[in-house]
Amino acid sequence: MDKITSVQKMKVWQWICAILAFIALSAIIIISVVAFRSLDDVYFDLPTLFSAATLIFVLFLVNFIVLRVYGKGDAVSTIFVFSVLLVSVIIAVVCLHFDYVYAMPIVFLPLLLGMTFHKKSALATHFTMIQIVVVCMLLFSYHSAEIRLSDLSLHMMILVVDAASGVLMITVLKPYASRLRILITTAVIVLISGLIGFISAAALGGDPDILQMITVGVSVMIGGAISIFGYFCLAPLFERVFNLNTGLRLAELCSFDQPLLKELEEKAPGTFNHSLTVANIAERAAYAIGEDPGLAKAAALYHDIGKIENPEFFTENQIDGYNPHDELIPEVSVKMITRHTEAGGKILSEKGFPKEIISAALEHHGDSPVGYFYNKAQKITEGTLEEKGYTYTGPKPQTKINAIIMIADICEAATRSVRPSTHEELATLVDSLVRSKMNEKQFDECPLTMAEITAVKAAVVNTLMGVHHERISYNLDKKK
Ligand SMILES: [Fe+2]
Ligand SMILES: [Fe+2]
Image 1 (cartoon, helix red, strand yellow):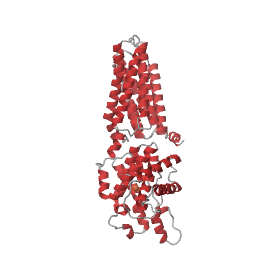
Image 2 (cartoon, rainbow, N blue to C red):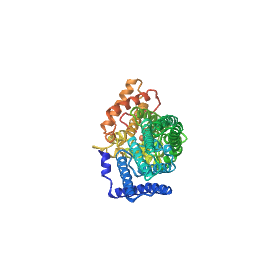
Image 3 (tube, protein in one colour):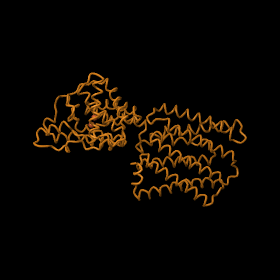
Image 4 (cartoon, protein in one colour):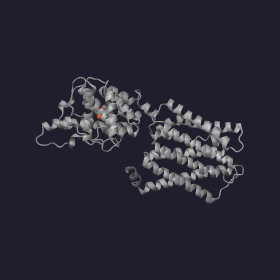
């Protein structure tokens, strides 16, 4: 419902910009077809071109609405998707002109978008591309003396095979799959599609001969291989330019060679170790509920990065027993503690981190109260003290991964302090901590279900079972 509202909430100028952009994109595609066909001395009449352009425009517009509803919907993602779509169609038009119809690298787009975007957005864009390529293919057969009906049927059949391969790649591959897994899976899909191309040539190719069948089958495989090669070469570039989260980028961010992680280890070793454990828990919990474990791990590693600004104010870094809060009034202490969320968000955005990782730094405490300092202030205040000045600034977790990091964060910290000795004690502790966050309504703005919370708790308990670290004790109601 919220996502539908995001389409309704679009401003008039945004619609005008989108419509103008799609008119331009449709025109570019039609002009490229007309230019190539004019080289073959084939000229179109205006009504045909106008109908084709209108159809392509409508396909773009529908795809745009689907992206707004199911995808990320922001300007950068939209520009990225439509740029890839336009380039893919132009490459298909070039292949149509040079008669490399069977070797069109159609599966590049579904592979790239499937690994970086919401599956529904990737599927919708893939089908938009296929439909536009069909329109272009029909324009290429327009007034063409040499094209035979059997050729056109085979062209369409190969396009169906490519469409099915793309759908398979989007649905089978997980965003966090390793390079080897991507390579093996895509190679198997391309081999199967080549085989189907070979059989299709026999069934639809008019008077098929073995050479034509092999040519079609091999061409389909070459198109697939170019798509896979293109993905591995261009994905890192797209990741940088459009700030995308592919498995490769996330693995890079999790590397201990990252300057920011090195700085965290150096300035706040306690926080660094805490972040490592939270990352392990978050990775396992994300896997348990079908979220991206790579993103959860990366976001958890950087969730407390803001603490590098004043590491000594956090218990996990007070190794020499000195506690600066002893010299401060609770009102100041709480500000020194809570500022690490916004500081983290600022550091990560300045370094160009993906926005999902920035949001985890900002949201992992939600708007929870800092109970320890509130209680301390209450003791020295006459009358009732308002809780308002003693809470984190929020926002509450907006995604399942950020909610997981919130749970992993409090459970890791509390386990170090309470040191439960049995599985039951640990499970009870985790249950009570999650319940306290639910009572604070911290999960009210993210789509985490009760069943998923149960799965996350089990993953947290299992990961923490083997973790035992020394840590200064603090009351359970004290939030870091
Ligand atoms: Fe934190
Ligand atoms: Fe933390």
